Length: 282
Image 1: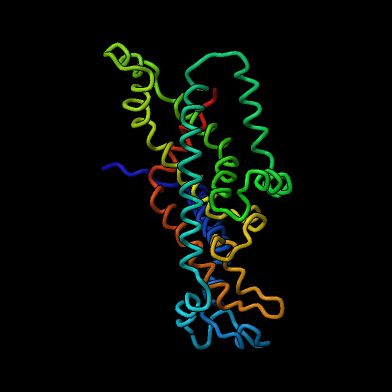
Image 2: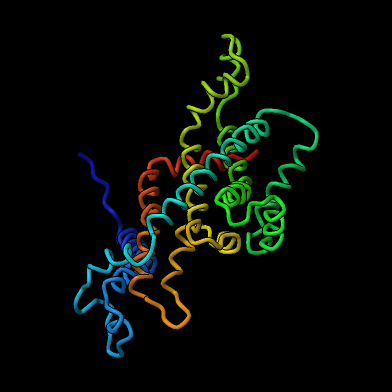
């Protein structure tokens, strides 16, 4: 058995690489570790002058009390409805648009692609006043439906661009063969193209869901009724005028990011292939 021996230079470079990766992981994960430790502290310990990162007496009851002090379950359901509805609507509109841009030739195609890219540059905070006026005219202020439309619209450009690249990475001969066998264009899209493009579609789905789940600015502007607030806005209940209950705020924040972590773990295998397929140059 032949084994390739590493040179001293290669060993040093490998050690440096591991050192950089470990430093990046520590730098990235430390805020979450500090947040978890703070969620286990009492209010007195958080504001203690001689406090430490690790809690002296961990208060695991904070993770139970936070559900009693605020309707987190209702907030979580609202966030799930908003994120799920936004994802479904964005995909229903984005898949046909991405397919048309990847397979069809028509006038204004390049200009439309440029418009898609430009529209992605506008952050919700820049357009929040206009969004509020439009939603007020449509009667969607203080409404979960309004947030679904807004989040779907802001994620539409990303959906179209990524799925267009995914569809372009698939050989057109597969659809042509299906057409010869008697399939219409729509049937070929549903039966042939979508199953093959599954990694890119799953990746797009998860990113839209996470973006809608984490959205804060528009939700804070449009929603005023407590029962309609998503989780990102609802946890502000612990941020009072005279007092901030940091231990409960951190505990609720951990519950808020838990679905995001689970989703990323679920798409870990499809993430690289999905993003690579979506990056095909048109």
